Length: 133
Image (cartoon, rainbow, N blue to C red):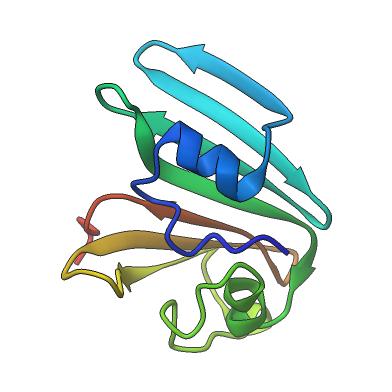
């Protein structure tokens, strides 16, 4: 699987070097949306800002979900940074939200794991500190 660790802040050129050509690309206002297909997942990325636009957020959707957060986050290179562990069957809300420390700086991003039918089915990272803390 493709590693999503370190995607935030990449330019579109750097993103393509890392993930290959997107299967879809669309400019919407001042943002660019790019979709990358990689079995068994799809990564949707929003690039924003002045030229060069840079990755501001991304969401990975899994073809098959994961029971444990460590499995989902580990599949895209975010474990153990996305810890602590969660079991999807025991989560009482559809979203697990927490800060995600950036290992290369003192920045903190927002991390969200989506739970559907007792499995972690999607993960999202935003280039801003969580406002719910």
